[in-house]
Amino acid sequence: MAPSLRPPSSSLSPSILPSRVVDLDRRAGRRINALVSSERADRVLLALSTAANNGALWYGVAGVLALTGPRGRRSAIRGLLSLAGASAVANLVAKPIFGGPRPLAADIPLRRQLKVFPQSASFPSGHTASAFAFATGVAVESPLRAAVVAPLALTLGYSRLHVGAHWLSDVAGGGVIGSGVALLGRLVLTPRR
Image (cartoon, rainbow, N blue to C red; front, side, top):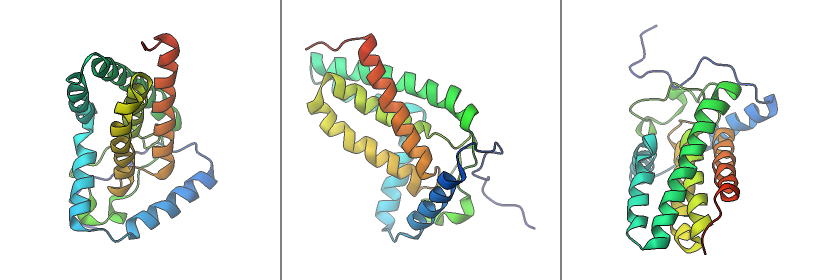
């Protein structure tokens, strides 16, 4: 067998998720991979997914929010603090506990594939946890600003499915972790009105 030109997009850690969840993930993955999408949509979703690596996308959004006045600065700070907390929970706590292999690169349409496949455990999606944490943190300070940020966070979550980096349960789990951390942060640091 010839060696693959692309690294495998799978961690060796087994998943502890119930078999029903794994079956649902595989069915959802097959449906997403079978969707006919334009080359432009594939490029945009791939670029968005990549732009969120290491939180870079959200640092940029925070910079723009900070330019919109005092409430924008508070929104940006709370969003970034929420992102940091959710990233720590997702990557340092949840991934080692839940584990799981990622979707196989061979199953993903070639033009959607990431240039470098993640090697960490699949559950949860750290990108989605960060996105939802940032958007929820912004919403705590400014629902109006969150109305602009939330669609970007939702699209980022879907992009992780579209490019084959994660399963549906990974994205859902990341969303719950991200929003949960941001809402817990509200208890620690009450928003100013």
